[in-house]
Length: 171
Image (cartoon, rainbow, N blue to C red; front, side, top):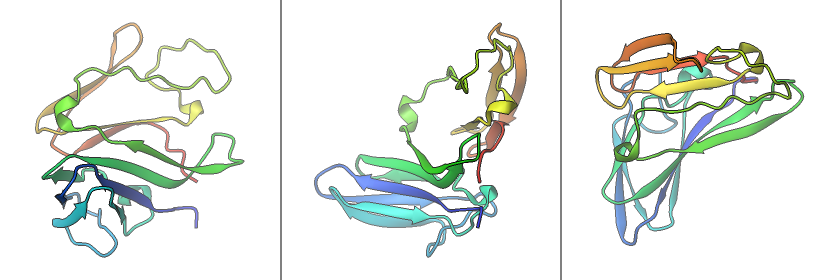
């Protein structure tokens, strides 16, 4: 199949027992073997891997809210994503950041795909890159600007809603 699964991996990082609470209220997002909301218990060093039930991009675990009684590390990944040239695929992932340390302004560095073109667009569709912003609070204004500071897009999002700009590069 060309559509593969997405995962959330949670690692307990503190001594003792950590209870992790997982909630997702986005329609269509479900997890293999679990019904939201649910909780799990981990001890230091244990990892819990949670797989989405569906395989399409719409089934990815967007809007998942994770809290815990102690510090944890959370990584999301997607298996598999094709490169722009379509000749290879690989697992990609990213470690999540706790909400209290999130900022309000971000610089998005697009890859150059071996080319230097100083276009002033938020994202070059030919590069098959994707910017995803998820609101952690209700009534969050998300604004994309070009290198000159011109507003390209501004939208108000509800908690757990996301805005995608760019092109999906899934196989």
